[in-house]
Image (cartoon, rainbow, N blue to C red; front, side, top):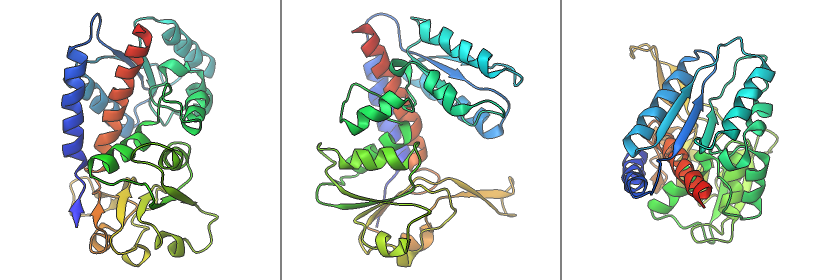
Length: 290
């Protein structure tokens, strides 16, 4: 069994991006990170993004509106960032506190600055196989992990667990594309699927993204399958100082005995998501310069 080390692959991509940013003429790429409220996970994620940007040489602007900001005020803030020629990419950290409407905020970001890849236009470009758009960071990270671990999807049965706009739908579309490394035959399973295990056992490549701790058991996986675990779930663990441990959507102990390749949690898909954000920001800078 081969462990697909997301930390190691992310480190190699960061080194590549650092070199590319250093070679850019003119100003460096700029990423605006908007965080509303003090959700602990959001605070941690934004700090990680800021640190990685600094390592690569990307400028980050941290914008912290008050938690009392209205929908109209937040959308005005986005409009101002859209109009700012010094900002290449905009990311609004999810989740937003209620009653802010998250989807409306994501759609407010100009498509050419939507480095998170959630804008309707960018999602549509994936379906059209138009590389001028931005791919959502986690699905892009999954595809990069597969490619850099030597997994070609051509002729493979790819089963995706989950149909979210953030992971499931875009990664299914990416696996279907007529491109090197893709060309997979894709099945998408979700909460309305009958006998999920019967389908997951057919997968040459299984991508789990449903947000249910250790849902995928050993008997649900075809021997020799490649398993990509996108889930990050907190499970109570009194032995930890935090009182919890992080696990994926896959029962790692059991599935690692069956799979040929598998990603761990943490240290698998997670580090790739931040890398792909930085890659998108560099792409946005190049598009702006062109």
